[in-house]
Length: 114
Length: 115
Image 1 (tube, chains in turn brown, red):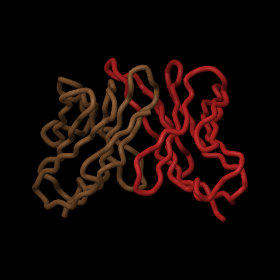
Image 2 (tube, chains in turn orange, cyan):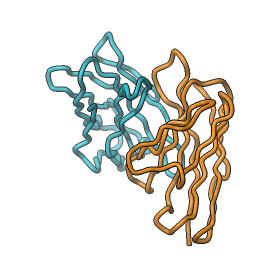
Image 3 (cartoon, one colour):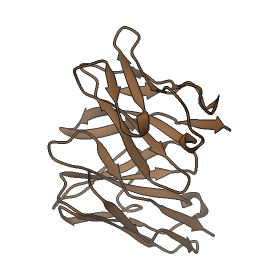
């Protein structure tokens, strides 16, 4: 398995500001993903974070709103830009190890936008 | 496109009784199926997977799942439920997307084990 940490664990932000969420994996992984989850609901994939290149975004998500970085094989960031109350959610980072089949998840970042 | 369905929003079961959380899938090709559990205010934890081989897969915390190709199902089971099993359970399928992996999650089933 892989141990994944996220910072911050939670934050309360003002409308119009931006927040960057960090995801750190304890070992090298091939793929990293960012999801959004409303409490008690299913997960929605935002994008796949690609090492050394632009992230691959899912339908409905754009780079200007959710810029993603992945400078190496163990670290990624997701920025939620120009936030509105609709962005209030839990943001989850996950990783997939080469040769493995399953994903491992971070503990999540609970974001509240006022 | 690959997809999974969890037909029950919530399942209630008495402690000590067997539990089943249902999942059906729709895939082209061989399915890669997973179960995850999420406890309150936590990330998802991997429980078990089916890739190939025996249709009965054993996983963490005494859970198992049965792959049924004819019924396109992958139900999660446990012979004797514990109160501590109360959580949100997600079924997932892996899809190949633009040459890379992508995971599709079901809507989740809330399991409540009653003492």
